Length: 135
Image (cartoon, rainbow, N blue to C red; front, side, top):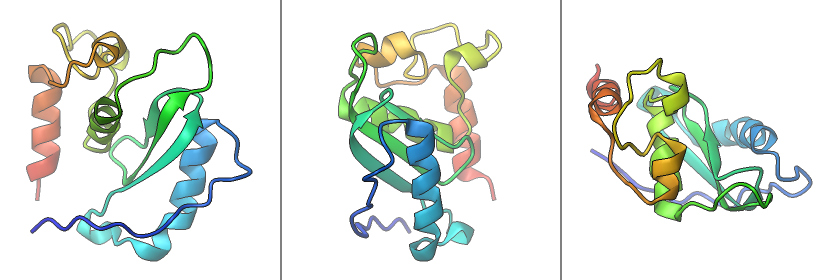
């Protein structure tokens, strides 16, 4: 069974826009209201971030930004940012970290994510499927 819940506001004031620091802060605050044993996932939202998002690989926490705070980083659609970061939670790495195994159009490639491409190619899809259905 899948249950979607909204817990509360996350106070990220005073952290700044560094997504690594924001992600660490979320992970430090969230354990009081999630159950890692049951694979709960927590996604935090901020208005500005150092890019579009960040997540712990094979983890439980991700942070997405409404918009990057730097001019040279393109702003992704919100649903694309969520799908990309949640993919990291299920073990999918960015294309540049995939050792050449990701050669097709894929949401794990920054270019295709920016273009709004919401699909995984076979390599990342198999990683995500394996990690979703593993016992």
